[in-house]
Image (cartoon, rainbow, N blue to C red; front, side, top):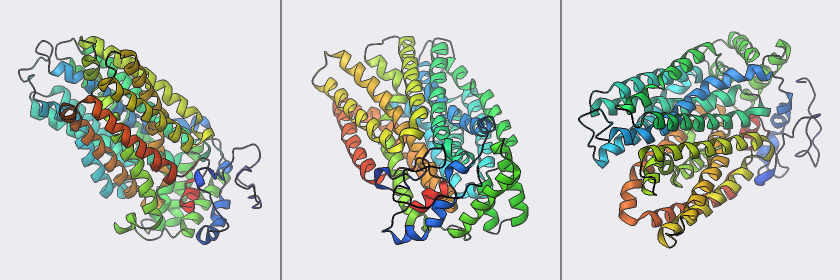
Length: 518
């Protein structure tokens, strides 16, 4: 399969695939792999035709574990969101807290809720400096250790200060995992299923939320139940760490290090070939060796030999990638989703679910809806493409936010309207921003700058997340829920304009082809 020669370019080359495989030259959204009018893309045409996505031979069973263990980092992130929703109720209860410091102020509650997000900011900054040195696999191992220590400290905290330290350490694990996991999956997954696997990581985040909501429901009326909620994640931290120690390193990262002078190239090439053989399963060593040679040729062709500098992140094609990636993750957060997730139980209580157990049960139903809609996105992302899901989903988000605003300002008796709007919001988010945001930031950055560029995007993600999460309650008190949702709706309109004009389609292209097209 991998030895098939590339087809001759023709006027319909953006529609024609190889054999029975899906197309790889995509032009939707106004972005093409190459155009006759673009001199720069013209010079890169051999690169774009040299490594067709359909040429990658792989075994589905071999692709499972290289996805699964990094995805556990996302599951632990999601679990924290879901568990914290119930833990705040348990922790502040005079009956079930099991502490003498349960009477928390709004600022202290904000630190508990968003402490892991501030830790994630620290993790994102650390990722900028250590990611390219350590590599994707070791970064995920360190992430699992930070997860484990943070979860243990939070669960066993004898006072509020130790709990906050635990929340920060757990958050550092989140920052490292959400930086390294999409890179590892993107760089090791076959091009044909890359979109599905990275989107499936979002499925694991949502699955973690659902498990967190379930843990909250089980322990919310148990004395010191919040301790059990946080302690439940520790076995998964261990599984993730052991699994990442067993997996091979990213072949692309190994080859990049060798080309930049950090290692012997022939020896590294042999190691990268063995790693890729493990990652592809059924592919013969000859086919894998050919793919390694193609990656090396592409790295040399696009001038990857020099070490990346800070200024390069904001120049040329990396600046384009930065605008796309940071724009997506920024709008992903400032359209209000952190508030819906972290304060789900609290919002439901204010909407009439007076009992803590009632609120956590409805949170479970929302988690199930998110899981189902994420599953739909996973199944169709490599068929429909990224842009259609983003445009359709964000349009639904916009409508639902204005409906919620109308309910709180004009239609307070129409409770069914709020329920419908909330369900539409959750479902449309999981079709669009949820999976596609993380997918796009793992695809658009050039390899030499991917570690640092992605760390900036993850930093923007968690900074926006922490800001919205912490500011939700004060803003709600200041301007009212109706105007707050209206503000989120206006931001959603702006994000729709951004997606329509700026975000490209990357369906079916290899990472090298995406880099050349930028």
